[in-house]
Amino acid sequence: MAPASQPERAVAAPKSNTDVVLLDLVEFVAEQDKPSAREGLVEIVRQVRESGTDVFALVDSELLYADLHACICPELTGVVVSHLESVAQVEEADSLISKLEDERGIPPGTLEMVLSLDTAQAAQDAFEIASASRRITGLTLGRAELVMDLRPEPSGEIHLMQYLMQKLITVAGAIGVPAYGAWWRTPDRGLLATPENTGEAALRGRAIGFKGSFCVLENQVAPMNQGFTPGAQEATEAGKSLESYRAAVSEGTASIRQGDRIIDSGTALQARLLIDRAAACEAHDKAKVDALAGRPVPAP
Amino acid sequence: MADHIAVHRSGLTMPVVTPRFIDNAWRRGCDFINMDLEDSVPEHMKGYARTLIKDAITNVTKGGAEAFTRINHDLVLADLEGIIWPGLTKVNYPKAEYGEEIQLLDRIISRLEQERGIRPGTVEIGADIETSVGVANAYDIAAASPRVREFGGASGYDMSRDLGVEMFVGFDQFVYGKGEVELAARALGLEPHTAPFTANTTGSVGDPDRAFREAEAARKCGFRVGGGLHPNVVEPQTRGFTPTQEEVDEAHQILEQYRQLEVSGETWAETDGNIIDRYEAARARKLLDWSELCAARDQEKAEAFARVEAAAA
Image 1 (tube, rainbow over the protein chains, first blue to last red):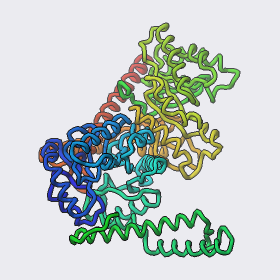
Image 2: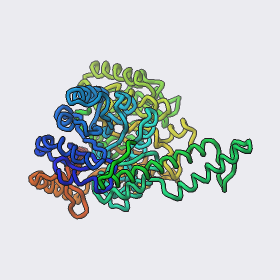
Image 3: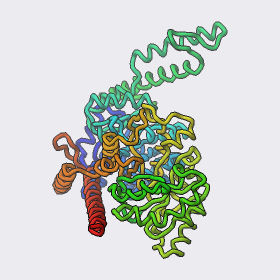
Image 4: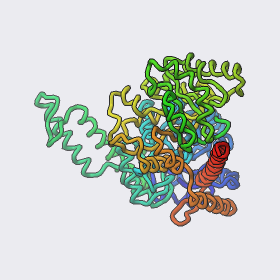
C-alpha cells in the first residue's frame, strides 16, 4: 500500500517483491493533498505496471466519482473500494467503472473490484454487498479495527475481529472469491507492525482462511509473502499424503492411515490444493523476478 | 442513533418485592436501579409486584440513580400498565426474539406516556437477547424502535440454558451470538452493551476486584454500560467505566499532537511507540466527551444524595 501522494515511493514499491501495489487515495493521503494526488495517478499506475506488478487503487466510496476518474486506465488491474455502507454504493461503483472502461478503451468487465467491508453496516450486510457486482474478485476488512474503533482485549486479541474475520471469510467463500487480511494482535495496529509480528499475523491469517494481505511498510512484504506461502515442509507432507491416498485407491480402499492421520478423498484434495498453491506462489515469484529484470513474463 | 449518550456505568438489579433492597437502593451510588418483575419475583407475587413500582420509582431515584424495570416476557401488557409512570426511564424486556415484539412494546409505552403525562419517547426499551431466536433476529430487534438505544446480550444464564452449555467456563462460548448482536448495534449506531471475554469459572457476582477488572477492560475496548446483582460491584464498575485523569491528560496530548500533524500535512506519526492519526484523535475526543459526561453524572448524584441527607437532618 503506497500513498498516491508520494509518487517516488509508489513507483519503487514493486522492488519490495510485493505481488500487488495498492495506490492509496484514502488512508495515508491528507485531505488537502488528494486533488494533486489524483492528478498524477494514471502516470504512477503506468510506471508501476511497467514492472509487471498488478496495480490496484484504493478509492473512497464517498468520493467515487473523483477517485475513479483519477485512476482508471488500461494498465490498472482494479480498485479496492473502502468505507462501503450499502449495496447501492457497489452498484454505483460498478456502473461508473463500466462507463469509464467504455470511454477509455478498456474491454468491458476487465477491471476488478475488491470490497473493503470496514464499516459496521458493510460487515452487517456483507453477503448482499459482496453479491452486488460480478466484478468483485475479493473481500477485505481493510482497516476495520480503526474505522470501527475496535481495541485490544486483555487476551491480546483485537475485540470483535475473530468474529468479523470469520464472517468475511465465510461470505467470501459463499460468493467464490478470496478474502484478504491477516490476523493481527496487539500491539499491531492498522497494518503497521514489526516484520516478526507481520509474519505471525500472516501465518495465523492463512490458517484462518485469508489468501494474502495488504501492508503498509516495505519491510512487511517479505514476512507477508512468507506467511502466506505454503512452506517446503508442508508441501512435502502434502505430497506424501497424496501418494498414500493414491496407493489406497489402487488397493480398492477409500482411506489410509498415515502416522496419526487418516487420509481420505477430502484430505487428499486439501493436499492437492496446497501443492497447487505452493506451485502458483513459486511461479508468481519467478515471474516477478523476471519482470523486474526486464525479461518477458508468460501470461498467467 | 441515540439523541444523547446516557451514563449507565453501574446498576443493580433487585426484586421489587424485597423492601430492604428497594429502601436502600438510593444509597448505593448506582447510575441506575433495575427493579425486577421477572426471575427474582415468584409467580404468585407478580401482580402485587407491579403495584409497587410507582412508589418505588421515587424511592430508588432519590440518590440520583435512574429507575429501570425488567418486565416479564409473557406479561407485557399487564406489566407495562403497572410500571410506566413518571420517573421510569427504561423498560428491560427479557428474551426478545422478534422485532414485532419490540414494536408492540413501543406502541403500548407510547400510549401510556401520553395518558400519564410523560414526555413522548422518554422510556427506553432494553431488548435483551437471551435466546438463539433472538440472536438470529438481532438486527430486526435492534432496529424495531428508536427507543432501543443500548443493545446487547447473547450471553449469561438464559443464553446458556437456551444453548445447553455451561455458563462458567474458561473460554468464550458465546463468540458468534455476541458478535451478531454487537455488529447489529454498531451498524445501527446504538450503544453496544457488551464486554470483552474474561474467564469466570466460579460464578462470583460480588467480587469487587473482578468487577473493576472487567469494567476497565470493557471501557478500554470502547464500552460504557455496566450493571450487576451485588452492591459490592457498584463502586468498582463506576470507577472502571470512568476514564482516569492520566487517560484524560493523554487524550489532550494526542489531540495536540494531531493538530501539529495536520499542520505538517502528514497523515500519521509515531511518538514514543504510539501512532498518532485521525483514528487516535477521534478516540481521544470520544474519551474526553465521555469523561465530561461521567463527571456531570457524578455531580448530579452527589447533589441528589446531599439533598436527601439535608432533608433528613
